[in-house]
Length: 411
Image (tube, rainbow, N blue to C red; front, side, top):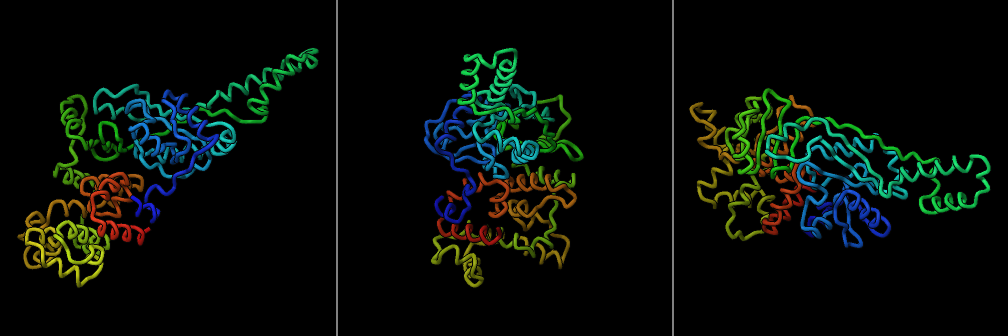
């Protein structure tokens, strides 16, 4: 991963945490019912998730009490606008934007000497079966301050009122209580520490619950797409919900998404794009057998590309150039079908969200498409970084170099 880090492509916007902030973070973990970290320094993202703590605990979901009860931590106003690197839901970053938009000034004030624990409550204590996800509607975002700072403020106010009553202003015991409170928590009289619950409305989304599920419910029919085979098999037993259920590997899924005007594919248009060239180059890289040149040079040099293209066997050649073969023959006869000449995985990779979709839905559908066929390295990096990082580890160094250069040139 070092090459990705050097190119600022691997979790480059994490916030360093050390010293007093570690104590506050641990107080948040304790308040939320999690074990504290033993680390003296680490980094966090926009929702307060830390890759180092996840590694320490051997649990990427260490801020969750089960799939139905995720949490977050705010210890710094610097978290505003930062990425959420391993979101449990596709809308997690939008929730954090909503929180900072609503309470940005208060967060700046509170995090001077405290921290905020976040509860994301959708009124579901636990998921018992996959289609429980259909109950997602409005998420109530709750806030808890470490050390109950807001309650300490109320205690200060009560002491001040007591101090003002009768001759209490000469009572040394009350003086001492006020001094103890001020020394411990500061002067809280002019602090606004009240964070009322706020509601976040969900629509279509992706969640890592049940090992990955897409819930598409803003279209003609509700469509549920599972990444996990066992969860899919459990879901199709349901007879109570009027929904369409697919596993992400099903070819019928692409057809249904097209029928519902969720995705589209115009081969004559897409074949002229840089995206097609990226996918074509990546496809060739899969079939290079002990190349004599660096992979990055083969993919970027037209002469070398053609040279190696003509060395692979016919079946693999069709996978790389099948789209162009199909379009060329289509000009002579309409008897050919896409499936006759174009590799299924390549064809799926060339789809895109339908132009009629809202931007927020386009992002979700791009993520679905790169999960169906992760052959566009740039879009996989943009829309599913975790999958990108997993794929990257298995690539040859030369391919890694080409991918890094490709992404860097498009950012």
